[in-house]
Image 1 (cartoon, rainbow, N blue to C red):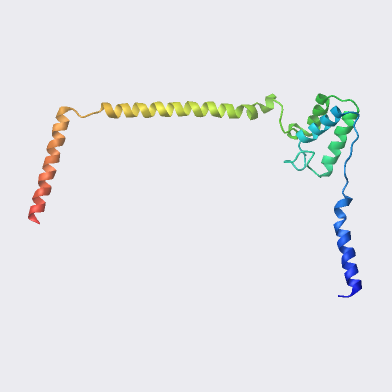
Image 2: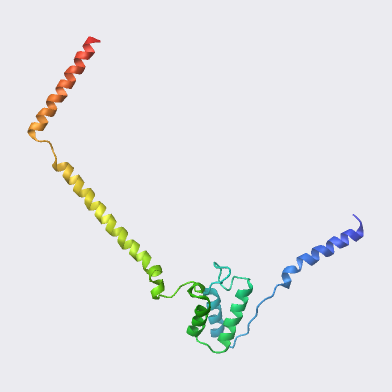
Length: 169
């Protein structure tokens, strides 16, 4: 390879190696550590509307950057936690919260595990009781003396028929 080709390849490698450094890094200056903690808590507890399974802190989507900026502005403006959450929920719905609030709409979400546990327990109890009752019925249905005698006679007749057939062959 010629020297000019090597230089071109080296320049090409440096250009592509430096592309990640062009990514924007968000830095927010807070008045105190409490506001910084509130900000961190919000961006970790709220879901990215576009990414769906990432929080705002871990998402690189433009909407996440906008939401992080909006949360920062609201904290700097002195908004309470409830006001910030209410704003986000009003705009994006309960979906934005990783832990949705308990409301009439979310009763099924919160109550389903308990309801399924209760229904499963009731079904299990009924099945066990029925099995016990069937087992008790089988043990109580022992043969009477007359039935045992008839059974013994039938077994003897089958054995004698088998013995006769063996002698013939």
